[in-house]
Length: 467
Ligand SMILES: Cc1cc2nc3c(=O)[nH]c(=O)nc-3n(C[C@H](O)[C@H](O)[C@H](O)COP(=O)(O)OP(=O)(O)OC[C@H]3O[C@@H](n4cnc5c(N)ncnc54)[C@H](O)[C@@H]3O)c2cc1C
Image (cartoon, rainbow, N blue to C red):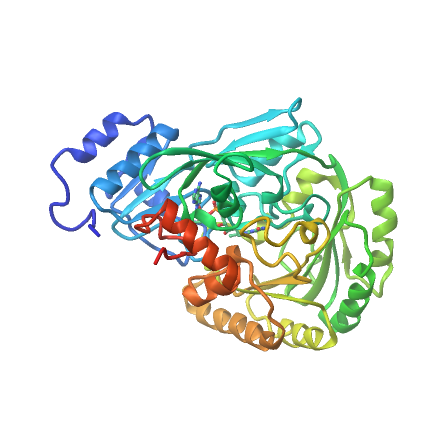
């Protein structure tokens, strides 16, 4: 594998020829925009690629793939740049940056929307909510549609409308040999199965076509907070309350220290709190009735669960996860919120030190669980809850202690681990990727990899090795 920064790597002028053929921009070390474009969301990742190809369209993607292949370069593919372990940037090699590809087209008659690979969740929401529609996606609006979709996509309306991939109609893919391949249930169905959970292993998806779902534009949504000392009672109430709840209701339990935001009273800032964040993806009157027991439980210290635009609710977590801080995540699924799990949550949640570390405990089930487990490469549809344990820091000095807190929390849950969501993995090695898919699916994905990318050209991802 060549490096773009060492020695004479390819014939003189090759980079200039590439630039001349492109609509987009090439960014090289030393260029004005280089530092801006090599940065990814996770500030703990600091890599220096030899070349960044900012693609304006499919032709640029093909040119970049061909260039990398001819010069045997390591390739990173970037959608929204939100890979937790920073898999969309590399040292020395070539970054294929899809960020400029921002096209979104709603087709109300067909009930679909097409989004190019550089679109962020908030941008897709903006276009679809204009018509009271949405694609089920994630909970932070600056996340990329591309990487999120390719891993599965969990979010506020999934219990009603399924994972992001459950509303995927078709994709356009540029394969490792530069071919443009369309995949859907009717065309290249094996590839379509693989891209719905198998990540970027099989090629670069340049265009996504989704089915639209009616959502909002107003929903009853938001967090209710209690002091962390109340966590044992809150979690037991919560478990019982959601046991038979309608699919319209989706919740996430959060533990953190109350943030210094204008909406948080000064005497609460820094105190350990537990929140249940709800979103009712149905009529507002029904939502108000369904969330009332939550709002009435115990002695909440803050309550922001109320009717609001879905677009506003989608931004709830944005201030908690800005670009540039140091982020580390440990994740696992568990079958149920039984008393042992609650004990772990109470104990380790109370140990949070950093003002920006947190956990999110996602309620799964509903429409997600009703899709056949073998229908897509995504694994873990029967999970009861997904843990996202975020050991975060604004300073490099404090980062290791936060990572250790996250690892300890995760280890304490080990007896309860079932599966793990592939998009919540760090770089944890082949065995963990295998665990994420389960043995049978992993083997099927390997066979698909041998067919579509036998040389493992696309390897900077949760990699499925062809061999
Ligand atoms: C703040 C934050 C919030 C999150 N919230 C959620 C959530 O609510 N729900 C959820 O399901 N996940 C969530 N995630 C996880 C998220 O789904 C993954 O991090 C996802 O990979 C991000 O996609 P991206 O395009 O932004 O990332 P990138 O870093 O650009 O890419 C991630 C991976 O996908 C590959 N890739 C990107 N684009 C393409 C493409 N077009 N074709 C082929 N391969 C490609 C990259 O090479 C890389 O391996 C969140 C992550 C963060 C950081």
